[in-house]
Length: 163
Image 1: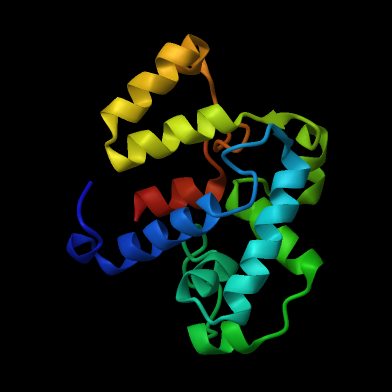
Image 2: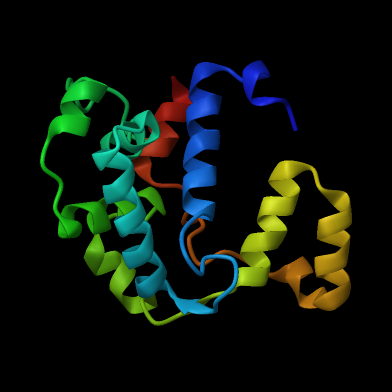
């Protein structure tokens, strides 16, 4: 993996978001229902906003998926009130669900912490960790994320690809 200093601005922000979400209590150690993990992620997002982390502004704005929707600056987003419900909605949308109604049918599905750890190993380029995880659980080879983008991707993503 490229050193953080070698990444472009948006890539650095996405890396910060990745690290933020990895820090969610239990995210890599507990088999949690999707809704519980999203609740925990929302609490971490609230703290990140409270401490003015720019990655929180990016995540809240969702500019990764809907560029140009918000004219608010990072400072304005970080200064604005964000409720627990609002933070939860941000996390639902961040994970490719259009809204709470779309997430609800999957709310009780378990998010596999070993799968998440395998994804982390891939992102980090940590072949030894990935190999160890696969030796422990070969089913990870065919595992899929509960939070993966739908197929086909949402309209907003298809439009972005055309630009």
